[in-house]
Structures are given as C-alpha cells and as structure tokens.
Length: 344
Image (cartoon, rainbow, N blue to C red):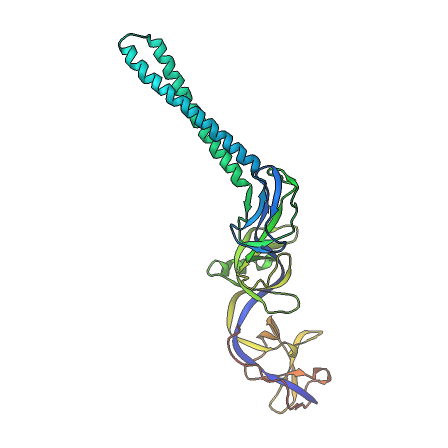
C-alpha cells in the first residue's frame, strides 16, 4: 500500500491552553460637559485618533467671560473698601490712645476691616471659580484614543454632567485588553506559572491572520460558580492597531515549555474503538497499529505522552487502507519529517 510517513522527533514544545476572547478598550471615557451652555464648535472628525489634550468641543464662553468680569469688578470694589477701612483703623488707633474717641468706635472700625478682608477672600475665590467655569468651556481629550460618534452637535444646549447624554465616547486602543475565560480545572496550573513569570499570550483573528503578542496581567480572584470558568485579561501593545474593541479573537496562553517531548504530525493520529492509535512503519516495511497517549496539540503537531519513541516512522496519509502487518511503500515526495528545534 502506498503511504506517506513522517519521523517521530523529540523537541521542546510549549504547553498551551486555548480560548475565544473579546477585545476590550484599555480605558473608556465618556466625555461630558461640566458647565451648561450652547455647543459652539466640534473640533474633530468621528473615528479620529486623538492625543491627550487635543481640543474636542468648545462651549460658548461669553456668559462665563461676563461672569468673570463681574467677579473681578466686585473684587476691585471690595479692595477699595478694605483699604479705606484699614486707614480708618490706623487713624482711630492713634485717637483712641489719646482718648479723643471711645474704644467702642475703634472696635467698630476694626470689625468692619476684618469683615471686608473676608469679603475680599470670597471675591478672590469667586474669581477662581469663574476662571474654572470659563476653562470648562474648552473640552479637551483626557486620554490618547479613538473617538466614536458625535452624540451632540453644534448649536445644541448641553447640560452640566448629564449622565444620560455624553458628548462623546473615547476608547484607548494602544495598549489594549483581551478578556477571555478558561475552565476552573486550569486554575492551579495557571496560578503555578503566573506567580513565577509573565505568561505570553497570543490573540489572532478568526480568519487566521497574524496573531498579536501580549502578556497576561489579570487573573480574577473568583471562579464563576454558574459557568465554572475564571476570567483572565492580557495586555497587548497593539501598536499596529490589529486588535479592535469588541472583536472576537482566538487566544493562546502559553504556560511553560515541555523539553524533550515526543512529537508527531497530528494527521498521523487515528481514533478507534479502543482509543487513539498510530500506524508505525517497521524495519521490514510492514505496519503495526500502536495505541498512544496523546498530549497537547500545537498547530499541526501533537505531543505523544506514551507509545512512541524518537526515530520511529508513522504513517501520515493512507491509513484508511491499512491493517496490521500490511506491507507498505513510502510515496516519493511525501511529507517531510518534522524538523527538530524549539517551538516558538
């Protein structure tokens, strides 16, 4: 029978667990107005990438400029009154010492001066508040991120701290999170390796594109009793913006590596009534059916825990026509033996 074969090799293999994850923004900000007024300007385009401090919105500042001028005028008036009151205190201090006026009159002038000092402090605080309100008319991006849809357009009246109607939502995508869940049966192994080093995580799109690489940063402190799973998060630099919030990705978490693992092509493994087995080509060009204990599968290779040794040959194509002790002919140009080396 013509067959294709591959060598059984011994090499270092990663120990991985797989899941389906969801991409999440590293941080999300709902931009709201902190003062009430008419929206005068929208300074960005929807979907635009913005930097921290970039101008987003401008609220009509004229009412707040007028309020600032009013508080500054109040301060100037009260400062003039305070200066006069202090002069009166100085003048009456000399007179009361010479007993030309009563001490009661002197104390009244001192009380008036002290009251005006408090009024001036209040005016100064009102000026700071007015300046702050004026600054709030200019709304800038609090983070680096990507803008969403404009939810309030120019000419609309915006309310201060309106929880139900934000002006805009910004998502930070560099770096970015990928959230995924694994069975609680993996918890002890994850904790074992997560406590000693940063674990590598790969996240790739379902269409098989080039995966992004990140690090595991979060392991939840509770197993979900309803699903029997535990939540994990990984952070990815996402410098090329491969990952996007809301996207589903295939996640691979590498826990450790298994040195000197016995590895065969996955297509060599068959499943029968008694479990999994492979056809091994013997030295006399006949085959035998050999049961195997299968470990982790990485891409198109599978670790064999028991049943094979390095240097043996297994059939990778043509198994359906084989029975034990059948003589086989190895096809020319068949699949090349698996190359030894460390898995990446």
